[in-house]
Image (cartoon, rainbow, N blue to C red; front, side, top):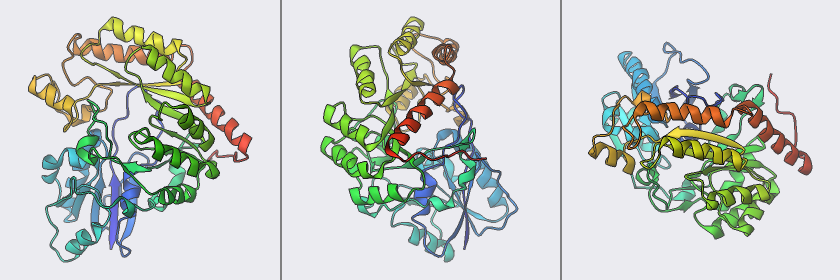
Length: 409
């Protein structure tokens, strides 16, 4: 059976350096497919879709809300040709009802242990309209090594430098952050994978640089320390979301190859100042994730926050606009208050204002978004700051003998 798995293109975050990472969801899903399925993966962000190429079944994997409408367009084209289409992925779960109008089947939830039935139904001509496994999570031990062989690795480089590979060590998140939909998607329980499976997957990746995409590694201190201890012999270099603010944890993270972290920065407090300094003390760079448009944000507040980021020598910054994604507390609050001003999912890139701010006009917030990017990178452009991050990781690799030329022609 020829199964074409498609990852739709989307508009990238305005002002962000336009590199493309190899997607994670499709390769994790690929590992769940039955052995008899011949899968071809197309990432539309790096290669075009051949709509005339023969296929028995089409899968559309959609991670972001900004991808969903393009996913529907792709599905409509194939369905007009008489080819059945199934949707899955995070954005499918967020937009399930709308997506059903463009699909022969919609898969909701985690795929491990479920694809044999789906493909058996397809072969028997009994494909169900909805396969709903939301909150019915498979045993975490069943999560295997992602099927990265479906990727065309040559397409994932930026200015000749190979991008990081994505991997995850856990699912679920015990936090319930205001703008986040993970609570709806993966549940409030922290579900760590067994160490041996995580380490085996990391070791199998032919790339020394990884991005551990877990929502937060700082969910269980003992587990976190155990993971880092197991990772030390791999000599991988990696980035991740927050690490526990604890000397023992940070020391182990550094020994395990922590390169930089994505750290949410929500104010200019001494807590944040110290958080950044402590990462730096352990040789870990920090890329701040800064959300603009919260109800207490004014023009003066945002400008002072950018000044603070420069003062504390943040290594990189990613500015986004608060976005009310479906199935978040943000969406519920703004929908109920009638503050949402755009329901065009293509606008939900995190770089466009789609709601009425409390203390600013939408135009003022949009202008401050551009101001933040331009002011932070005024003295040192993004490309130069990225070069410094790469220089940092190359120095780490040279120290432990793992450096090798990764430039792709």
